[in-house]
Image (cartoon, rainbow, N blue to C red; front, side, top):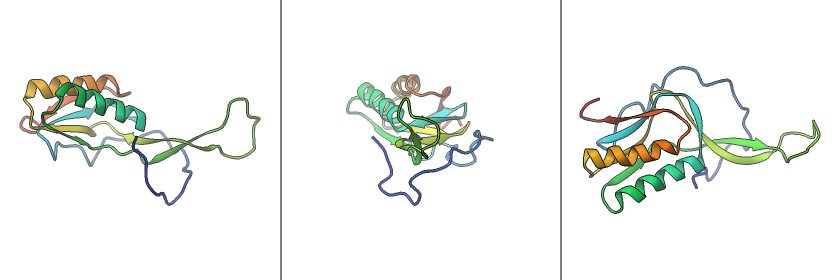
Length: 138
């Protein structure tokens, strides 16, 4: 799964709720078709990998996939039945912050119908509502 090789700070603060729309990564840049989020959420490394596998499984050997997300925000967790206090928990997993309008996955080298179906399968694996977008239509 995706995770940073090296981080400046091992544990981050949670931050406030995700505000505003995406001002970067909001257009199809590398491929011909993309999957754009319509909501704000955290997307875990597991969810990204699951969506990637769904796409690869559908298109088999055709086309090229671009993952525009990278989970760089560390999320900590404390053990079950831990008493209050005793400090902040260890890093449990990593998430990518997704704003509305973020293009999460892109594809090229496949037909539009095939790309639409593959990205729809990936969308089922993600915690955000999303839509299929095309470079030529957007």
